[in-house]
Image (tube, rainbow, N blue to C red; front, side, top):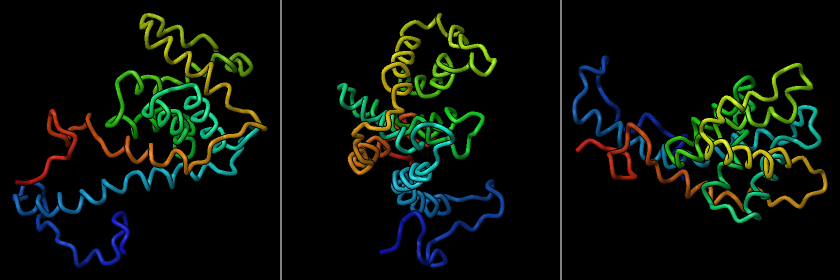
Length: 210
């Protein structure tokens, strides 16, 4: 069976005929929409594959980056956090490979269509809040998070995420849940886009040519 993210014979699939988008027709966009739907449906597979790239990369930390993500998610799950929150915990550092200087932005960009504004803010800002624990050792301002004190609910939510789950997830002897445990959660959360220019208001499916 062909992988929808990497079709075996793409030449056999319908294609648009335009050279410039202004020449596009409804039929062109029907072809594009038809290809995009199975590709979008395979997003969880691509995200999980990218998360696995963190395995074996310790970067000087006590455990590797994948184990840290699993441990963060495990701590959140065992503390009773809901599924969306746990998925955010699992994917919060997925940007380490491609966003060495801004990894929270990568995770936030992936999660933005699928999560609440509060969870998105938490993921996007967790790097600054995590800095409270180590920036001063690097000659940086550990209190950069204070710039966000004027948003008390979001501030406390993100500070708690770092204190209880992210900053605490470097234990070498903790019984982390495996990635397979979280995979169904990832698939469910990433199957319901709700904040995208490509989704009709009030719906959770991508718009298609009629």
